[in-house]
Length: 85
Image (cartoon, rainbow, N blue to C red; front, side, top):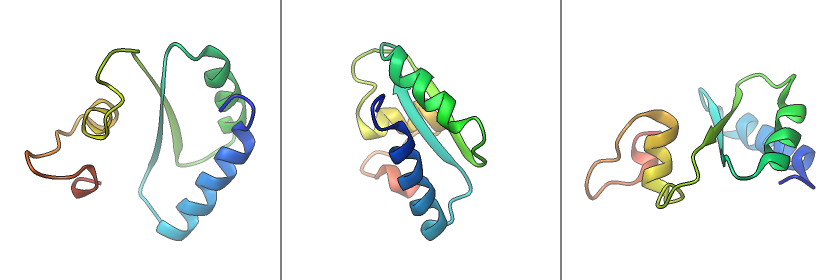
């Protein structure tokens, strides 16, 4: 992420243009300060894309856990993260 931050954000912009989401959230663990710094610099003029720094804590990297951390919404039992957005 730290080496390709601009390309990652450009890819996100392309996907956002195609998918038209209400909001785009990028979650990155707090133990990656260089990547956080690079993404913040690239996102300074981005609209509709937010960077959220999350605690480095197992099992926050799973799709359901990450969805809850970033959105505050809990994925229903037997459901998928995409079910809530």
